Length: 256
Ligand code: ADP
Image (cartoon, rainbow, N blue to C red; front, top):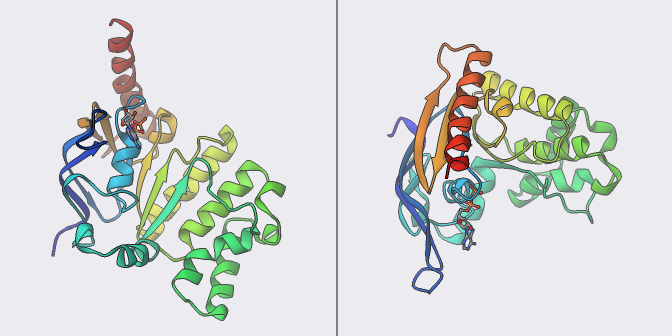
């Protein structure tokens, strides 16, 4: 049994394979995550962050290399098995919230449980508990377009957490939120991470958001260029180091 909850080896992604537009977006990345880590992926625009997060979370399949989640090689699963595996083990939070506008918040939130064929009584108990925790219980009958950005993101988080996944994948989760809602969302993720040992892998371009993580992985040109662990650093000192890594890259780009 591996000590890692998620492990990628020589992960490579080529878009447009064998076409004139062939482009290698990820090059032989080795990456391993222990249970309870809170990882932030950063890097310049176009460096491969979304491709990376999609390929380690079953959203997309690598061109070569392996990805193991809970010691299972995701390429050995059928698409039906992957669908089931995804809603049982992974919770997704996206910048765009990805809520269906034709469904109420309640209907959006219960989707992973409906897919998992959880019974109605259990669904009701879980939604009540989670919506209460996230402060959106009074909004469950509303449609996403009737809610504010912060409320929609809470509903999206509620849907991501409702099946109690052990891993949360978040791609720029605060991208559409103001600073107060961003801070609240990060406090919530941090609490889940510390209290429930939920493993979090998040993409962000914002050093302040990144400073909530326990490890920073900086991607450049489809490779991991740098890794920084918070360890004993205060959040302020960790933040400063993250700013330094990002500004070194900005200076390099400006001097080109
Ligand atoms: P980031 O998230 O760091 O901005 P992406 O992972 O979105 O970067 O993209 C990495 C590179 O791969 C970019 O050059 C982008 O243009 C390219 N790319 C992303 N998605 C596709 C796709 N579906 N087809 C072809 N190229 C793509």
